[in-house]
Length: 130
Image (tube, rainbow, N blue to C red; front, side, top):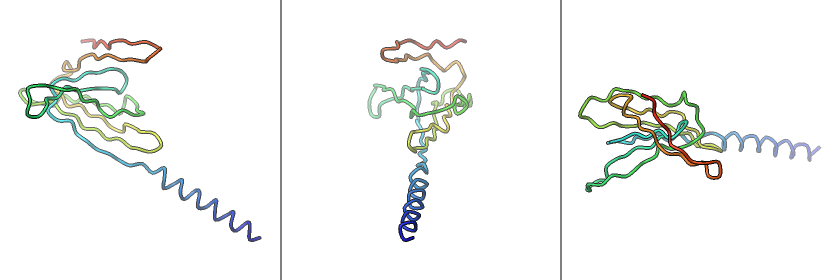
């Protein structure tokens, strides 16, 4: 009888630990001063931003994770003369999930094609159709 009580406590403890361990950590972020936007494939985008205190630029990728294309929004609401920007929300659980990616641009034509690489399965370049 005592063994069943111990076994029951172990099972309850396991399920409790699983429930706590699977709750995700939500991370929100912004990428500011975006000069160019590149769409590589699916939900994978990268952005050219200036390097602080320099005349150079570097590429920043949006956090990658499991996603649905419905999680990505292109919002043409940036006034002319202002810098584009990006807002993202990811959830880290067992895997990383991209819950939201909002890319704020001047116009949809600000999206450029970007390269992709699937290793042995090949490489290519995304072409944006205007």
